[in-house]
Image (cartoon, rainbow, N blue to C red; front, side):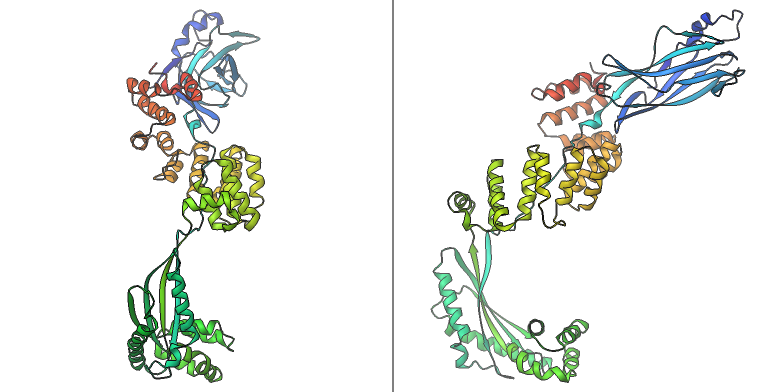
Length: 545
């Protein structure tokens, strides 16, 4: 409902009695309206448009009227820029009000000062005529103020610890291979007594004797070298798969190898590329380029054979290695359990590698114990992730300077999370633009949430709500409240039992005119002194008290 306020001002009207002292009697003929009706703080600024409407035959043609907007709060006052009007025969450079009246809109601006959340905007009017002036004895109320709900935004910044790459179960392989002669699928006895087979048997036996390792199965994989026709090579590969399977039965007679699966690959272009890439063959880059340019096996073989200068080397050193079958036994290694990791930190921390240290830090609750583990990871491995995670803990503790010092030690300046953390430090220092630059460089969830926090501080509530949609961030519900989507905000807060959530629900209820519900939510705030004190002066609740 639009609030119409009346200003008591002295104007010289064309009347039978032309005394300035009588003009206050006609003050109720002048209307003042304020938009917004309740002042709002946005980005630490209070801005409003005040419209003054003068009726016809009101303003004396030789009078000057000055109205000073004043914010009154907590026993203090702040005056704004005055509005000054003049009659049509005054030659000054003020806004002129003629005999037909006028409706003039003025803009008022105040910098937010703590305490203005419970305030009122008033006007102080002074009429001037010739060398005399008359100040009105009472201030004229223009609007109530000021809404500071946006200041409920969490401004400490969102950040995430760097993840570890610790594997609870590590996949391993024990492998051997047998080689075939060109155009043959016969397994030679020499291949079954080769060093590759001996090492395979020893390796599988070692796994069988290791309580931390488990065999999950074995793959027998047969190939043909990419020479000759595709049809013939596929036949050779199939035949080698069959002969390798029989040979494996002899090799693994006393071994536990799990379920055995046999596959025939055909032409081994993948192995060919790997061998060439790891070789010292002249023009190997040209060979690899041919492989990338052509996918048709026949075309590949033709183009490679055309390289007469290197094909002899390929035929001698590469192709024989691709006439093969592989025995691959798959193993799972059980890494240290959480209980073992925590015990090793106490008894033998030197046994832990970087990933194990990073994981162990996540298993302990005490912040200082975490820092000690990260300190070890930094000392032994110069771990950038440990530095990042140490900075996160220091930020949790409010030790911003120590966090900043830790971040300066990070070697890889492109590491994920670094820019976001630097932005958090700038955010905490109130350097919003600098913080935004850092957050914009971060592609993570935290960086996006922090950009939204800056949007809220700057009054761009729609942008904040869009960035936070579906994130579950602490500021998401507030962004929807500020953007006017009370239903969405309410759904997000449902089931949350913290006092901050209760306060936001109270605001929603108050805006919906549900006084009893708002009071019930405020009654839940028992331990947070800051929120209890805020509620006493919060204009959101002015209509429910």
